[in-house]
Image 1 (cartoon, rainbow, N blue to C red):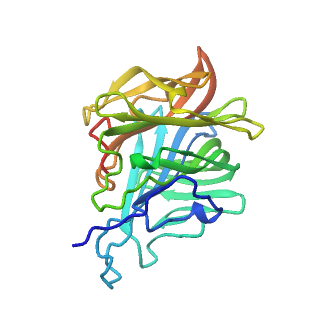
Image 2: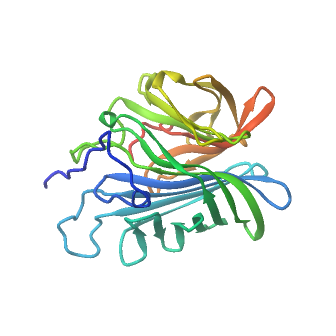
Image 3: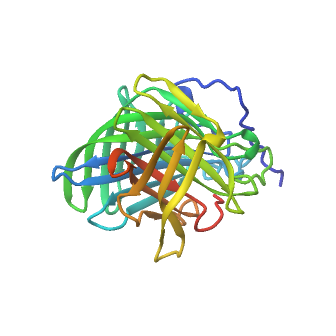
Length: 337
């Protein structure tokens, strides 16, 4: 069987909207997601995560059958509620086709059955009737920007991101439905690829990544990440800060520093995650404290890995200066999707 050739992600390629908010089926993997905080009518804070993945596995591409798995779609959804003490989460997986599962090419429009994430005239809308909760979200988004890891690393590329948005909608935990307003983070991501069918999601020396998307109280929005190597060091890092006036500062790798402050060990997988972090981006420094420690998401039934993605508060000493999400991968096992 011939090896599948995937296009390389190269620097200097111009991004065109709304087309590049849509799918790029020639590439190996990409995803769309929303994370954010909402507050219900009782005044309780909740965290929300909605993620759709598209994967080209390199199987059945010459098979004319409509059942051939040329494109696969996956979805994760999670609701963080400190009163519950751990994530409520669900997942979906399907091959693209038959109008049951689809990722459009010209704009964000992806669905698996009755789970969906779509671009609207105002921003984005997501509808997730999961097994233990329902999310029904609408967002008004601000302008996009990009942050990239070098293509040669075959590492994660986030492009573009909607830095800050106001979200209104409904969340349902069991049968209790509540209206909410929120601050959220919406992003598109596509990893770098090599031309070999044996290409890994990360470079061979990489273990996983730590990533944050934080909306700050002054109207700024910070994205920062580090890709960790298998020896415990930093393989690559980067980030951007969008100020309230729209000016974007891009950070060099040496300007981004993640320092673990406290870890939590999962009672289910024994993975240990640095759920409290100090993050420095240039001269900006903040501490991240989780809404709750147990925000581990077991996605072995869909994309085949376990990771921690949770709602966090950004602190300057004892003062809260922002809220957002922290994502931790490669702590259960080296990340291989």
